[in-house]
Length: 497
Ligand SMILES: Cc1cc2nc3c(=O)[nH]c(=O)nc-3n(C[C@H](O)[C@H](O)[C@H](O)COP(=O)(O)OP(=O)(O)OC[C@H]3O[C@@H](n4cnc5c(N)ncnc54)[C@H](O)[C@@H]3O)c2cc1C
Image (cartoon, rainbow, N blue to C red; front, side, top):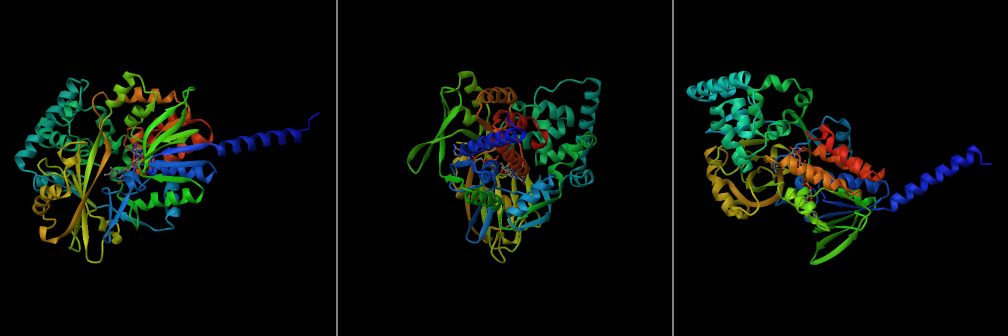
């Protein structure tokens, strides 16, 4: 008769075997951004065989850092902030304490004037023309009254703006600014965009708060959450240091990180599970076998990479999910300082760039002694004139506006260069949610595939959320419950910001 001790031993052996088997599993992580590397790190630490594939020759994705001629540049301002203390500890440990605390200083520039950001009513009214203020206030009051007397569902984002803020403010600010940033008329954007604004670090967001403050404060999550957090953390050596350290730790635990590896196909076996990944690197295409796949690739591209191909309706849904691209112009200056701001928004439509940031204000290591730099963010669509433009063209289109805003002069410019990113912001077009549900439903039928991250879930997340998603995905693999992880990641509002 088996004894209690024998039962325990048998169970224990089973658990050890199960855990050993898992560790023999080959996990392929698509994308070496913050989400992918956070997952890879946790899995490699636990002994899983991990391979990370990224088409870039560097790690970090959107949170990467470039170092050139003694300057440090990020893809626009990246401040690390979270309300999950343990994430600050994780990052501080990773960086061995090389993490500074900063207090955010920001403004925005519109109609030849600087405004404080976040907006304050007294500030905006003191710099706007009196007649403009009266017109905006009257149309806002009219819209508010109409909404109260004749409540109706907004059919699109323009409709929502007009009914919440009035036609004057829409025509003066919201309409032109939205179109500049998103490249589509607000009438083509979803009302859901308005609901997502809480996580958006934008000027638009500031206006919403200014005119809708009471409603905002009712939601404690919204109130405490990110865009208005004034303190933030920043690695002394650039935001990309976090991912660089994650990749070093992943490699130290036996994980493999293949850069310059463009994922082309996700191969499904007869059982409907992912069997391998086809990736092109150095002129060769190779198949990487996979027991589990964590993808942080843009969800639309992922859907279209599945082999056998998805049904036409699913492919159409994937194509309907569009991202906005961004060109970054990095300008090195012979000046000591341009501003005290971390960043400044530029809302006017005639100004090419949406925002500038001064890296020296994030870390003194961002530029050589007595020098500084500016990063310009320019919204565009893949394939359009801006996307295809060279650094010279972008510079010539921008320098006059930098001078007009009193920031710098042509003679101070020591050099400039440009980078571009395909997928910076998911565009919430009117039917985006239907397309997203179709895509996610299809992916939920693939038991060993998790899609996560900013691009993988087509959602605005910050860096802390990206890390949490990566950890969550890793946990899903450890527990052999990829789809549970997907459901959790996809439904947890905390991570969506
Ligand atoms: C301008 C800007 C400013 C931001 N500022 C802040 C901020 O202040 N604070 C904050 O917390 N967050 C900020 N964010 C958000 C933050 O950058 C992201 O949430 C985070 O970096 C997302 O990480 P990710 O790994 O999910 O996605 P990504 O970083 O996009 O990683 C996806 C990776 O997939 C790779 N990939 C794509 N296609 C392929 C392919 N076919 N084959 C191989 N690899 C592929 C890409 O190269 C990329 O490395 C900002 C974002 C932007 C764009």
